[in-house]
Length: 263
Image (cartoon, rainbow, N blue to C red; front, side, top):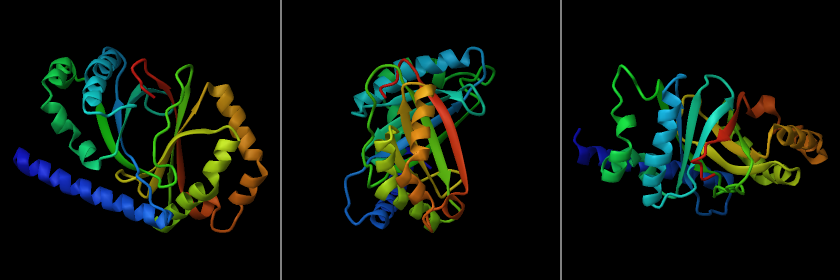
């Protein structure tokens, strides 16, 4: 497939992703609002030179190139608690699914990026830049359509993914978040960064959201307040909203921002 056909195919896929997102939003809420898409990049590394090479790539090549494309608030993180460390993440927001789906093609056409990314992009098989990488596409909830970056300062992040046993169960969990649970989060001190449907991945249907805290102590305290909240207790025991009915697995990761992170 030549470059032109590849871009056309990617654009078609973007349209499908956008239509899927719109369908999900319509099912979740009758009031449509402009929403963002997110690309979540995950890089599995080995200790040694790879982490420093990754940090240099993110700070001096990827983020500047994305900012030149008018993509702001790019998040870069390192996994602090979770499986398979060291692992690095990049969270890239955009109002265009097509832009995210064709991102690497656009980066390849950026001469300034190519120069800054040479060591990372051309790493030999004998000294690879990473062990494996994964890319997920996400679409923001209609009820939380834009990423909200925390104020600069000491902070950490919690990245949580909820898998559901069926699409109906997934949409029920989204409904639960949009109609009540997000509000309880905010009232009890849990600060959201984004909520999104997972459009791609190995364990669909699922949703992913990110919270931010000053530190682990604050995270523990605020989750404790949330767990004791009377409204949450009532909501979580409501028929149709209980975890056994609509959630089949939860993945919970703790992330620290890298110096280059704009989130």
